[in-house]
Length: 296
Image 1 (cartoon, rainbow, N blue to C red):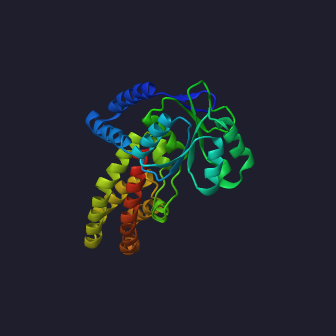
Image 2: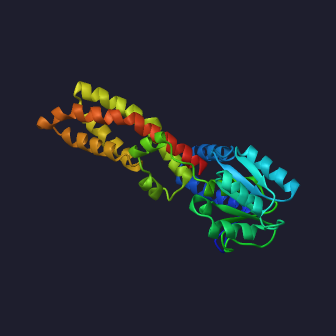
Image 3: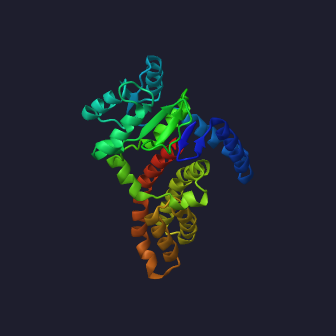
């Protein structure tokens, strides 16, 4: 199990029950076939290696446990180094940047409690705040000072992957920062009650339907067919609102109003040109968000 705080625990058996209940709820909300397909894709993606780049420091004095931990981390796609005791942990932190520490508690020379206390109280900068996960075969909880979480031995690989996802945050690339400017998923998260399954489904609907709708709108603009353009603008602006594409929502809303006639229709081609230019980066942002939702 993984422990966060004083009482929170994660148990694979409970997770399977919760997943089953979620599936029953989702099946009632819409077609079972659609949700089953999404659910199976989410489960399949969750079994893939963690798509993060990180370096893990394993503090463990038992050679057998060292080998097991390093092989698990390698399968998950992580680099790792071994420290045989707390003193070696401190020495390695002086010369190497690590993203997370897996800390055994009972080690010679300097045990895990002492090493953790030294890191939190004596070190400065990022090293003093590095996530430290206690490896324990006893009843230790994360309420013990300094530790961010506890993994109970023997460590299951799925739980190891989850705790690393929780505490290792991948830096945002320049590309990710650029595309994230086009969308925000706060409203989508609210209306789906943060269900990754439903969020992925709605993102998929956007990616499947909206680009084609934009192409149809382009034809209507070219042919000055204002009524069908108004209908499509009204329909697509709801999609833009769900994914937080605020600029696209505003443009679609304006186009819908301007199709009423009069001199305002002359502004529609320029408005649509701006709308059309946003569809590619917005879809790119949603593709990235979709990957992150599946990995979460």
